[in-house]
Structures are given as structure tokens and as C-alpha cells.
Length: 212
Image 1 (spheres, rainbow, N blue to C red):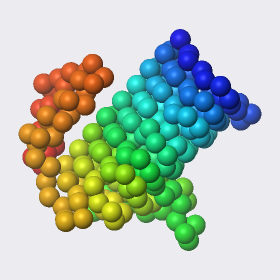
Image 2: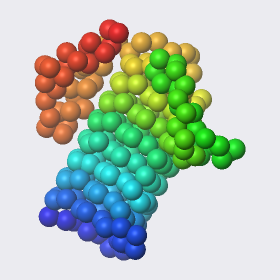
Image 3: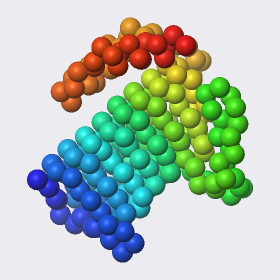
Image 4: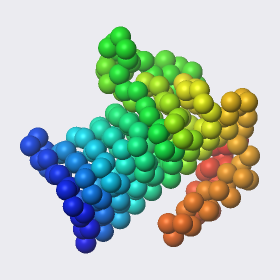
């Protein structure tokens, strides 16, 4: 079933829009194809979903989004720009979180991986790469080509470090490791809200990542 509120625009001029079952699209939303919206997802009021975006399943998305893939169970409910990015599962982006996907020089974007190695992308448009279970505070700024490792918690007023290590807990006071026991507790709580259980094998993989 599709729950469609008033004044929603589907622009299929340049590509198809596929909407899966049990999707809710709130009033004033504009969706431009090609685009795919997965099952049980919700688009907030006056969302702007630009071409080449994949959402879902079970995502809550709002604001301005373009050229971005949400792997599932992600929340970006509020305003803020997100472009040319890859977003893992169970990510929550606080209100006003915004990323850059184009350098002021309009040059080629170089991405630095989690090991510090630099990679030429050959592209002028590259956003960010956000691992599973990452959370950002309100008005978080993410610079062009940023990689944020699995489980990072961003709660600082300065831009996200490039790259951000896995399970980093970042505040204006500095960076420290996210206590893995607390992380697992939070992850289970978040997943239970969507009636999903953190399986033992997944928890083991998370603990292994945190120990590396």
C-alpha cells in the first residue's frame, strides 16, 4: 500500500521512479527519477529527492538528497543536504546534518581511507561514505570525500574528521573510543524499535571490528 499525501510530485522526465510496498510520502515532496524507494520507508514533508537515489528498505528520509544510496534502516528525517554518498544500515543523521559533494576548486576529489591511504576518484562529485550504526549530532558538517567508519558517534561543532575511525566518539573535547558494551546496548535498542534482533554473528563481527 502507498500512502500519498497532497502535492507530491513524481518527475519521470529522465528516468523511472519505483516505489515498493508500504511507503509513505508526506505532503509537498518532489521525487525525480531515476529513483528507487524501498519498502516501509517514509519521506518527510517537502523532501527533495533528486535523481539516482536509492532509499530503503525501512528508511525515514527528509531534506535534500541526491545521487545517494541508503542501504536500509537509516534515518535522515530532517532538513539538510546529502549528495553523492553511500549510507550504511542503522545510520542516524541529526537535524541539519549536511555534506559537501563538490570542492570549491571544482577539481578531482581525493578520498583518504581508514588506513590513511589517499585514492584519486577521477570524479568532481563525491560525497561521503558512512558505515553502519554511525550517528551524527544536529548541524553536523561532513566535508567532501569523507569516510566515517562503522559505529562512530559524531557530537562536535567542527567538521567530521577525514577519515573518521571506526567506533570513534567525537566531541568538542576530543576523540575517544566508543565503549563497545555501550555501543552494543544502543544498537540493540535502536534495532528493537524496528522489531529487528541483533544476531549473535553480527554482534561478534562488530566486536571484532572494534578490537582491530
